[in-house]
Image (tube, rainbow over the protein chains, first blue to last red):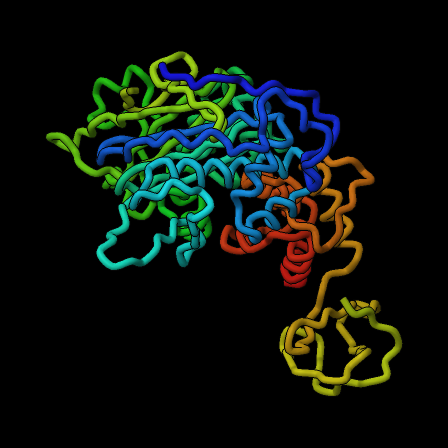
Length: 330
Length: 135
């Protein structure tokens, strides 16, 4: 695996990096007044590949670094970040914007590597997209991305062509409401049954979170907003290991209530356990199938990053464990 | 949100449902009208274009604030008002759905997913609750 030099020395953060970053951290041994390490360029994913990038906010403590990230954003996005209540929320919002800008910049589309120069827009349903410059002779790449974040993890998935939705959640996330009451209100009957059949409450909680992230990822991949696909209009079917050998598809599938006969083969799913602490659900538009509707496994490359400081290839390590769906890690 | 004191203007064609009349009212500073079953003069909110519609009672807003604080584990003295956005307070999509579920239980209403998606602030939640409770 490839790791760039230098972990940032992390002074204890007693002051907020917002909004006055030029405070006490000027005398770090790593000089942040110089430009950040250039982003390491990366090849665009091939048609069959999915790239997953993530940042762990707790590992990003340097106030000067965070203020450098802030400088990458246009004013509107800075205002949006500062609109969050409190340092921790502002930080994960900042890291989410930083991750998406720096990640897309790495692919050097049209020779550009400057995260600042990217523009984003929303489609008519509100899904964020890159707004490429319209230039003669420039055909924008069909690059697709989606981000998700919690206070403890920020993630971005990238593909070429395939619509993608991702959702991350802490494994130990607890709902305030009773799980089954919640599921009866918002999930489908099959999903309620699936949860109800789990006797251990801890496992039931985890299964709930897995279902939640998978359902979120599906809706985000569709990109039409949550009201167009209320959660009780589609079922996520998770096959157990015993059933998987009979199942042509990947082990996780979505079935929409309005066309239950067609187990919608258009979408494939991956469920990962990241760092032992988080679930990451990925939903992809299926590009090609093998014979008899059998899906090719998702080819996944996962990298942990602190943008412009350090990248680490983690696919194939125990930082990224496939727990659902058919995935090969590169 | 404009607050209403005594009537100095009467609105003859307004009957019980304020929603029926989305009139342009200019130069208005106070209004009262009979609303069946209620003795309280509802507070009004002037929107853009001086349309007048019913905004929620303070009591409703307070209950929403309490539910939001509980869901997001905010301290009791956290500053949360009608304008507060759920997302800005740290609510992710699961929190928002849980908040809506909490509101359904508290007010004995059902919120369709389509409406739930459009609630982004405390005020919007309170306004929606009042509409649903009226039914």
